[in-house]
Image (cartoon, rainbow, N blue to C red; front, side, top):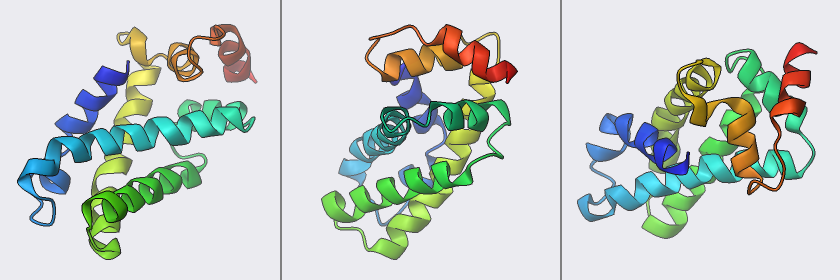
Length: 145
């Protein structure tokens, strides 16, 4: 799933990262990894802090619920761009804002699609918790609620 998330980020990285003059050409692949890890870190943090029902609602309502989740991912990614790649904060925010909402919208679509099992919400959340527990049953219950 994590490799597929990286590919999803990469497929959407055109203007935001790959053609962005503020990101050095030699750092673009690493920046894509930072974007993917920012998404994973924020989703995992949501789970670890007991907000799994908020995550389910976010994915259930096609991303219109809890826009603060997307904002958190944007801010995390922008901070990494600033800290690790010395990109000024305004450019880092612009880059993150150009990439993350599009990726998250597609992630929601993929998680709701019956064709992409690795992005099914229960499977995705189980992988985020290190496969310590199968969360499919819990997610199914929360999706009905």
